[in-house]
Each structure stands twice: as C-alpha cells, then as structure tokens.
Length: 249
Image 1 (cartoon, helix red, strand yellow):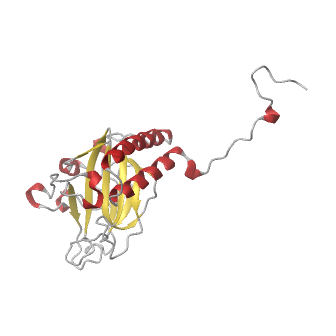
Image 2 (image 1 turned 120 degrees about the vertical axis):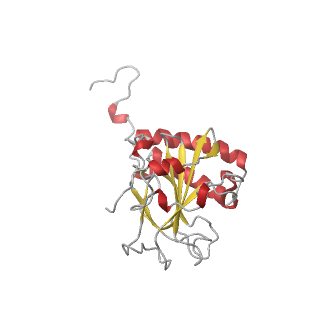
Image 3 (image 1 turned 180 degrees about the vertical axis):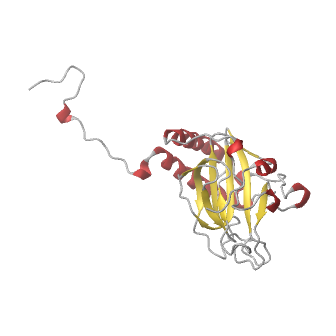
C-alpha cells in the first residue's frame, strides 16, 4: 500500500464530490434572490436603505454568474425593437412619447409615481390581445441581452398589481434593468439568459389598469440604470428608434 504524500489525503478517505442541482448554480441562486427582493420592494415591504444595499450586492452576484454561465455583452447596435412586427411609430404619448421621470422612485414599488416608460400599442380594436391584421398574438422580444432576474406569471384579474404579468431583464453590459409589463403569457423562466430579439412573452392586458376595457392593448416598457444601488431612469426613445425591427418567426 502506498501512503499519501505529506499534506495530501488518502483518495479512499476523500469525501465524495457533491452534485449540485441545476437550481443551485450561482446565476439561478442570484436571480432567485433578486426576484425575492423585487417582490418585497414591489409590495412595499421593508425600507429603501436596506433594499439599496441588498440590490447592489445581489446584482454583483448576478453579473458574476452571468459571465460564468457564458453570457455575452451586446452593443446598442444589436438591440431589437421589443414588439415583433412593429417599430417606434407604435409608441404612444404625443410629443414626449409618454415619458415622465418626475416622481418616480424604484424603491416605492407598486406605489411609484411618474411614468419613465413607453407604452407601445398594438392594433387591437376589440381588446382581445390579438393583432387585427394577423389575427394572432404579438410577441414581445428582448430589447437587450441579459438575464431574467424577476417575473410575475401568476397575475389574476382583480389583483391591484399594476404590472400584471411582467419581466425584469438585467443587462450587465450597460447596467440596465428593462421592465416588460402587461403580458399575456411569459415565454422565459427566472435565471434564463437572453439575447437581443429573443421572445420573452406575448402582449396582453394584465395589470390593474391595463385589464380595464377602456385601456388599449399595449406593452409597458421601462428602462433604468443601476449603479451602486442607485436606480436612475433612462429616456430610451432614441434607442428604440434605432433598434432593429423583427418579423414573425
């Protein structure tokens, strides 16, 4: 019998390697943590100071996990308009395109003020969430690359949640969080890495106000930049104007 060298462990005495489940990989764990934090912020639980500290720490973990999992950076030149078959002309809101950052605070959750966002309307006169020309649903595509860090897929009519069935995508390349709200169905899962143009969902009418008959069917898109836990609104209309237009799969 050969004895192990000094400082080494006999192979027969080494503990068996631990097999980690897919849900235990660092990126999935970090996205689970972000989603849990986002739910607390959304539901106005806790205080903004501790949430900022936690957000900063979690996004560092998400970033590290993203690149470790093979995630790539994408320049703005690769961005894709978020509604399939539509372009910037579908953005409503008049001269300012509906964008108003005044009064917005990410940490106010479901009670936030302002409208640092763009409502992108589909052709849907009878409010059935189907395109009047094609007769089918309109796919929501990812504007940027990144990873799904938060979502809500279980919204039901009567809920006062404003975003309905929503998604948050974190793009480490530009420190952006992109919010897609009022979806009908989600096509991606928490922790999933996406590229510009990947299908995320289909346009719907979920959300407290969006579900009302008077509300035209639209995607609600918000872009914010996160640095050191501080969340800053981004006026992204010019980026939407330059984004590539996608056609049906």
